[in-house]
Length: 149
Picture 1: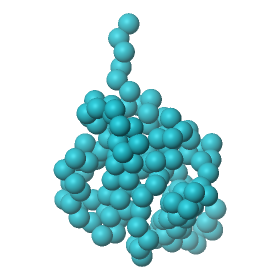
Picture 2 (picture 1 turned 90 degrees about the horizontal axis):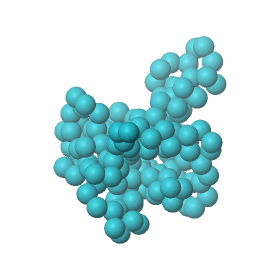
Picture 3 (picture 1 turned 180 degrees about the vertical axis):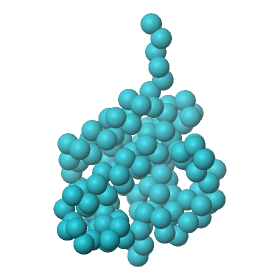
Picture 4 (picture 1 turned 90 degrees about the vertical axis):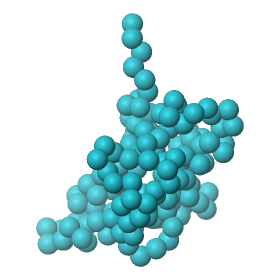
C-alpha cells in the first residue's frame, strides 16, 4: 500500500503559476470515473488532471496485474485522495494565516504546499506525514466494496 501512496503523488502536478482551479480543460476519458458526481469532465483544472493521471498511470504501470481500474476502485481512491489533500492543505493554510488573509492568499499558500510536496516526491525526498497516510487510507477504505455478511 505504501508503494501505491508514493506513486499517487508522483507526476501529480506540473510546475506552473496557478492554483487548484486554474487552466481548466478536458480530462482523459479513462480518468472520468475519478471525478465527483456532477463535475464537468471538460472543465477539470490542470493540477487535478495531472494528479489523477499520475495516480492512475503510476499505479497501473507499477502493478502489472492490476485488472480493470473500475473494479479495483483506483479511480475512486485517486479522486478522493486529491480532494482530501487539497482540503487538508487549505485547512492547514487557513489555520496558520492571519485574520487579514484573503481566500486567494490562503489558496495560493495551500497550492504552494501542494507543489512543494509534489517536487519533494519527484526528487525522491518526500515523506508522507501521518495525516497524508490517513487521507489515503481513508480513501482506500471508502472506495472498497462493501462485503455483505
